[in-house]
Image (cartoon, rainbow, N blue to C red; front, side, top):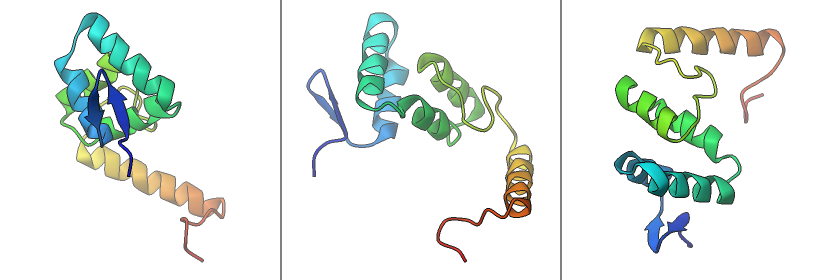
Length: 106
C-alpha cells in the first residue's frame, strides 16, 4: 500500500498526520504543506474541515485557520455536542422527509 501523501521526504499515512504537521508549522512552510496537500487531493479542504470537528473547539478553530477551510456543516463555528446532535437530527429528519435513505439501507 502506498503512502497517503509525501511532503519534503516525509510520509503521512493519515489525514490526521498532515493536520498534526500543519499545526506545528507557520509561514511559508505551512503554506507549502497546505498547497501541496490540496494540490494532490482536490477534496482536501473539505476533508480537513470535516476532520477538524473531531478536535477540541480551540484546536478545530486553529486547524480551520491554518488550513484555510471550514467544517462542511458547521462552517467556522464550534458547536457544543448538544448543538451537533440537534443538527444531526435535523439533517436526518430532512433527509427522511425528502425520501433519502442512508447509504446501504432499504
